[in-house]
Image (tube, rainbow, N blue to C red):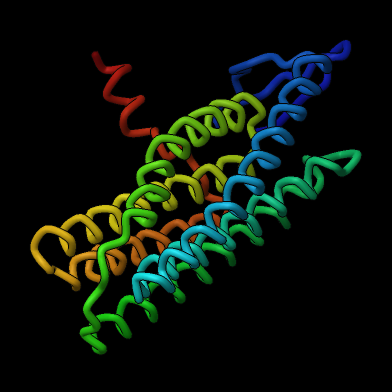
Length: 233
């Protein structure tokens, strides 16, 4: 998507060359401030989430919870890359560099989750019940979808691939939160210690896919399929 500046406004052009949206300079500044707020909140929340998750994981001997905490660190790095981009005088100039940095974060996440899940399966280590782990993963399932939804719509209005890529990081965080939460529940109810590790491997595959898309700069909305269904209706 390309931008043309006309009398203080930015005209965003779609792939066919037609003008799809107009952003005034004031509106663009507002969206930039919103992005900075989103990444600031994301960094703060994920630092707390990382500390709580790792602590809960150590107490419960849960490799999945510790991995979830370290995933939060990856989220912080991704958000920090966006924060850095939008403190530049011309954020669009740094778009490609930021998207590639987020792609690397996807690959790092996939590598860690895969190694962590395989080691947990090989070790066959029983997990203790973790109310704290259930609480932090359940909270993430409430907070992260809302944050991702706001970031997706902000990124689409800006036409920013880096913001969209960061939103995809949040979507993967939601997936990982869900798999760890379900794994903890199944372990508590039925003793299925292996459930979260198997699900985490699925998330790792998704992370590699999203990392490749980000590296190529082929970033679309994570909610694109849902929006297409809504448009068809």
